[in-house]
Length: 150
Ligand SMILES: [Zn+2]
Image (cartoon, rainbow, N blue to C red):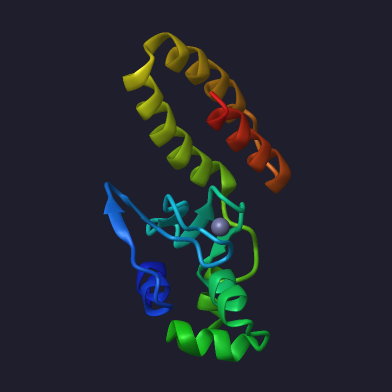
């Protein structure tokens, strides 16, 4: 089975490793200046800061190649479709909280280095939000926007 990094690179997007994540130019919007497409190997998921497109391995292939046939998508990922795999790679939305934690932490870390006072303030707000039990996609996007508009 292929990883999301392999799949994205096969699509012709070059990725740069930044710690535990990868970044590159987003294929879903005109991303010319700064790479805003972020890939998370741990969760096999992606998120774009520019256009907000996000999802898992399955959704990336579906969106990028415009495939609708499940079996074609599985073929690209190179998996034998067993029930077990079907369950792990499906259209179920990824764990936003996890992605948020990764992107938020990276952003806060940068902010703390630039401006300690502002960084601590944002960190407090962030902690409060992260204590919520479940986060929906809309909440997730608005939280990211809030964090980034420091
Ligand atoms: Zn984008």
